[in-house]
Length: 365
Ligand code: SF4
Image (tube, rainbow, N blue to C red; front, side, top):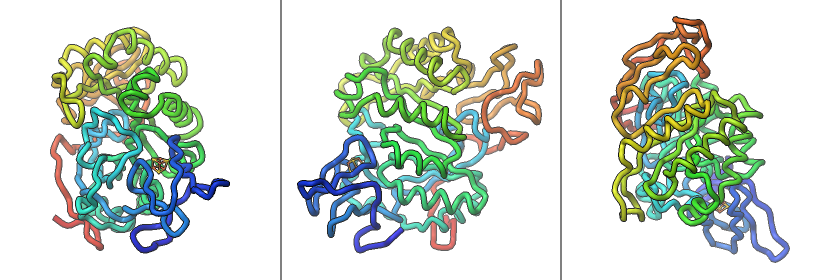
């Protein structure tokens, strides 16, 4: 990455005949005059090129359980070093991380960290992986790729938590360096994406199909259920049927509960009954691993064998309470393989969450 004053040189753009520069990183295709910022705010045209203004800076680091991403079939029970930067390329009115994604004041980005320092901090804190999360790695993709490369060189896995709103070329390059992803499928109508996120559904579905069919990235999907917006059983059925038809039955799906936030304060939180009902619909159609999130319910947050229905991984919030997989990730009762990335026994991270200061040499407290 070429460092330049106020950031690092960004990629994925081209010049238009009218003199503007078009960013080709996400389907917004922002067309920029000199000193103009893209909608994500962290990419700016400066000195006739695109600059990523937040390269090497983070809004903070935390050691989380991997289940918090959420990933239930990727190295269960292990700790992951999570971090984010600032900015986002969607404008979701219900954003649950708006203080980071909508940040306009970069003094939030107090932690400076090179890719190598992040990898070292992950090792020092006992993590198996590093996650790009809190805000969407699409907008800081050059930094994320450099961090991912440093992590893999250090023997760590890499995780992306994203809305999947990304163009084809950068998507291909980014996910070459990623081991697991949780992609938000925020709703299942173009109207939802247009009215609440000023985006569109099609590119997100393209990303899901790309990851599932053309990469080795372990994929899970999250849908935040918002009362009155995307929680009708008809929409949940359509979303689940699309996953079944286009991705197959083994991709885990998480239905999580909304709480009022950012610009959507006009309604209450999602009742616990809604994600449970959604789970019943999705499982009834044939999806094998469907979970509820942001509510307390051990039975719908545990993993079951899709053949004999044995409880394979019991979960109490983020704690692993039982483990009925053999060393080959097969059901101990009937021998059926469980889809995912498993490593013998589960980790014992538990539900604890620990903020971390990353120093030039690695982790500090
Ligand atoms: S990544 Fe940012 S600058 Fe580029 S097109 Fe998307 S919103 Fe615009």
